[in-house]
Amino acid sequence: MPLLFNLYWEFFKVGLFAIGGGMATFPFLAKLAVKSGWYTQQELINMIAISESTPGPIGVNMSTYVGFHTAGVAGALISTLGLVTPSIIVILIVAQFLKKFGESKYVKAVMYGLRAASAGLIAAAGLTVAWMVLLNQEALHAQDFSHALNFKALCVAVIIFFLTKKYKKVHPIVFLGLAAVVGVLGHFAV
Image 1: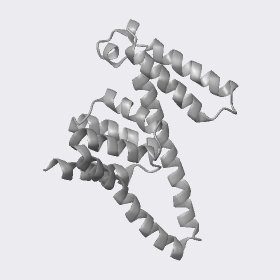
Image 2 (image 1 turned 90 degrees about the horizontal axis):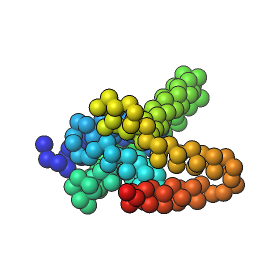
Image 3 (image 1 turned 135 degrees about the vertical axis):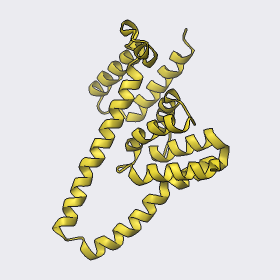
Image 4 (image 1 turned 30 degrees about the vertical axis):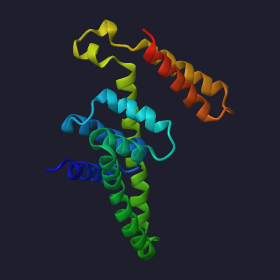
């Protein structure tokens, strides 16, 4: 299958099943990394960091990033289109359905149940990111548990957590910028 069609199809499936968008796409993207080989798990973590710190929906940012990384500008456009197509189709169908059955107790129950599915996908994404960032995956695979904890990442996470609690009125972009600076400096540190 041609690469661009593959990008469209894979991101169409991500967009179709990642209820809740954003971080809910992460488990699907982690599996896609293994299945396709288009990017590594570490590159996925970097994509999340970049997508979280740039304007726009994280799922769209990540699909665009993967598409560009894989097949340039055409790949970015195709994978983004693949991700958003299911949402457009579903929204059109749901809008028509809600016009007719919006007050039904069954419809309300289904919509309420989707909240739990969305929360579960987002929680799974958060735990997966924490697992991949805070633990040294190579050490775990080698069963070298003495080097399994990524102390730098843990320290940054704890410091940012306490800063956000202490300075609640500071805009979140300040903390994103601070984390980005620490990440860049940490990348160049020996």
